[in-house]
Length: 478
Image (cartoon, rainbow, N blue to C red):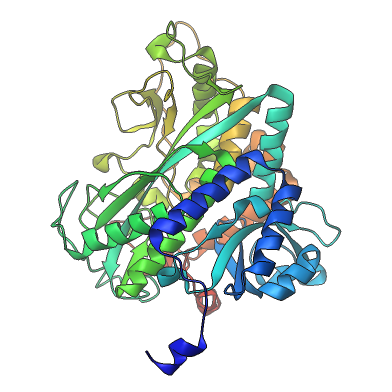
């Protein structure tokens, strides 16, 4: 044993024990109050000497994932007064009002696989508060929690969500930052749907990611290569809306780190490579009331209830207005290409995968609606908040009698999506003028850094100025 190993005694937990511990933590989050959880976890952290740091994480308005590590003892002493410079993070505050607060969500505690995140750490999500301790309007994790609690209190309902998040694994570390239009991305596997050798790079990556997710109590259902070469998808179980979004963010982070450990890059660009299928983040959602799935009706059309059909109608009616939320990047509009199973048609279907909404096969327990036109680089909290707001507060699609129904399509580029979003009274109603304006400014900045016409080649600008790229200095090079 090396000397450095003898000097350090940080917590490292085998994967099977991790799964048990995280499953137990998830169960506690459903049965204990925030106050009870804080007391229990504070006691645990004081006793467990092998934990050196607590990772606190949050997402900005675009969905970019941020993390900072607090010394465990400092965190225990200062948990009610954690501040950070919000002006350094796009989407929060200006220089004149830079100080923001972090409010720990004790229900989100997870123990982490040490081979991916390092030994001696646990992770907790946080809510962003203004300096006067109010929920920040650009923190959609806060907004989603507040709205979910309002729905439960006023209507006794809650949203359940399951995500099918696709991505690509490409050769080289930081392949996105180093992208060249002439070279493109280098694929690491030529396998296709369900078709990959057991020990090729793609399958080894998928296995490692799936093992880590199980250890973090994601309750995996399946994992496999997707249709395009070097493409993957790992599915995890239905969860309450906020938890589902947390899982999405941790899933992407875990995949990125595992790929980097293997000398590769996991990218969640919607269409990184022309000529093959892009990546989506299909969201399956349903509404539950008193532990009953109210989207199911054995006598309803296609076995869906009136509530489910009303939800579909509202999403279809507002589809163009909210497209900028569901497809938030320049690159995401490349994916909406009908030649590659792209869900760009504003309609619902049980078979046609070109429809933005699909009705999957289900039973009474699993009745749901699948929104297919969501890109994997979108902000999951903002997307789910928007979907819930739309199905509860939007207007149903009105069909004119004696007129042939005209098929509508989602915007073909981010510029058109911005126009629909900006001119919509509905988006102003659900986001407010200030937050809406801030979001538009970020999306317009991305659009201005790229050619208006997408063309047939993926441009360097739509990659390196993408909001998920880790090196923020690239924005200063424009």
